[in-house]
Length: 221
Ligand code: C5P
Image (cartoon, rainbow, N blue to C red):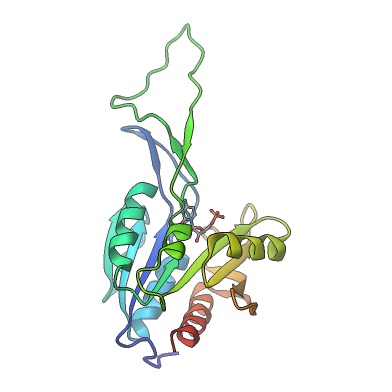
């Protein structure tokens, strides 16, 4: 699709995975490569949108014609998303955001002491950015899209999550050891708050991105 059906629109996409630091050299992270989010950013730009890509720790090159805002932690991602989405027509949260972060950040590298057991790591909750932007839309007509990686009862869990988060669309995919993360391909079902269900067969992440934008455009009209 290269029809400029997103022309004049501002879309915000988050991509990659947050890193929650324990000390200056260590973090809690996840396996998200950022590929799906970058594919969403590229395809939106090709459809004519002004695109802000909030990129969490992705090694991928900046897509041409896209505003890239690099972030590290969930708290930084939240700040960047809130700022960029103030005037956005659509927000797609493709980033893998850590649900928890270490309660304490050690300013110096944590050392092992020979005669001592290791200290447990205490975690605190991160803000749920998707739920927050869905509850407090900066514009009532804004379309908000979330992603959900599920390992079992994919559709039932997806429906429940869509409700809980309050977004318009939820892209649900089944994940396992080698599926989805870091892969060039994806397979998903896109659930709509209006009850719609769109199956996207196994294929390139671009194809899923195009389907998502198609569903967003329908809801923007
Ligand atoms: O609850 P769960 O992590 O499965 O939800 C995934 C969706 O919620 C993704 O769209 C992700 O970007 C978003 N999310 C978020 N803030 C969090 C956790 C997840 O915006 N703290």
